[in-house]
View 1 (tube, rainbow, N blue to C red):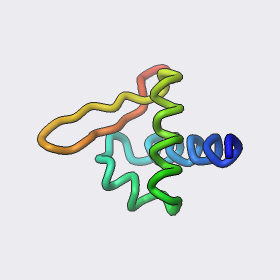
View 2 (view 1 turned 120 degrees about the horizontal axis):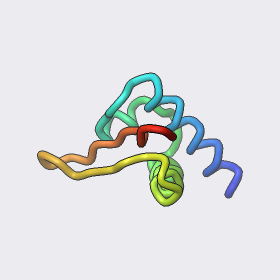
View 3 (view 1 turned 60 degrees about the vertical axis):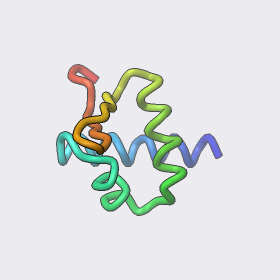
View 4 (view 1 turned 90 degrees about the vertical axis):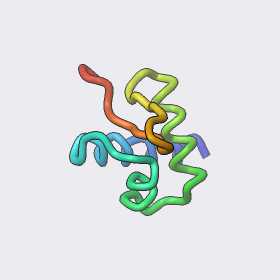
Length: 68
């Protein structure tokens, strides 16, 4: 499972690099993987300090941390 989470993290990284800041809903729509896997991968990236996740206007917004 760790391999799938790592691949998902790479998918998220590339998606954010291409699209900039997105909502969690946009991330789910843009990456064709199960939501649970996307959340695990996003958690990994957040724990490692590669992404910023914030809650604003009733939705989560995600973007790459500058310098990552």
